[in-house]
Length: 483
Image (cartoon, rainbow, N blue to C red; front, side, top):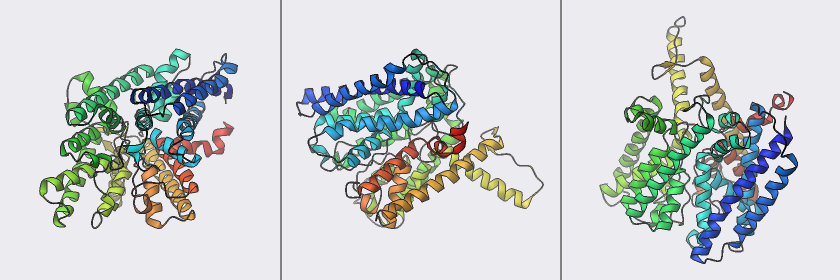
């Protein structure tokens, strides 16, 4: 294991990350909100720490192997999450504990959207902007940006890309060079963010709110600049814009790239995961609309459809925006929506959850086993579209599912050990492991009232979810350290 090379890379990336402290400081200067000092202090501290790690190891140029790639990705998220919490620790108002500051920073960077803060609209504009910016950077995976930069620093990025990119099939690249892939992903990401910002502004948001909410919409994060989230604007048009861009961001970015490259939207329709994803979203909307209508929760059909569509897509894609308290909805709807977050978005999107393609493959595998019971000697292959998948891919998906279930149970039981009730522990685990945000019970509104121990456990759950279980879990195996 080339530890000095790893420390050098981490130093470079922390120094690079320190630049993200500058925009909130400028926002503070523009709005004169008095909140700029924590960001300046965090910037200085991050630069010094980054250079301190980089300089003694600057001549290390070892080739990265898969093991180093996994370790860098995990350390990268843990280290950056820690440095991202510095401005929140330095804040005078609100005064956050270490657990609160780290929880909020990791929630932003992993695009979970769970918050410990209340009275959000009264915070300095710089702090509001910083929270949204964290989600935007985390949404695509800061590693992908780093992959575009690392080749210039003399480090290959393929191992990092494999460890970071969501989805079961890691080796498919849109362009021959990995740095080009990362750049194309970011071009699409930035373009969608600009389009979303403009749409929000035209619909009536201020420029500040439009930029902030575009950041968290495209990142499928869920942070807002108001306690009431999207409900603050009370606008069906804004809700619809949010739904459209959430659906776009929850689709595999490789597909977006293919559509742009081929100049044909038919690419979407040829992708089986895309079709299953939209089928799930439409089904959720119909179920929510039917139950809300039959219980006369809202004044008329238009409002019912607006609320059903917004929350079904927001929770189903793991964004976690809200316009109403969905946890108070009748019958099974709150639990159904929480369970929908387990599926989440498509592989290669900014959404959380297990990803549509994995759940779909589990379903196809189940059908194959049923068919084998009827015809034991027949040979059935699992096809994704027209492509027959090798058994090792299906085995990997089953391995992921079993690891996911194990991690879920351990985290949930640990939370119950801190004193949380069953519903709160279950929904908080689901919300953080799926990078969703809002839960039920004590965490329906915010996470500020749970114990510090519970916050630390949930912070770990966010990292597990963001790194798709295996990337972090592999570090706990003896084989990883022996090889």
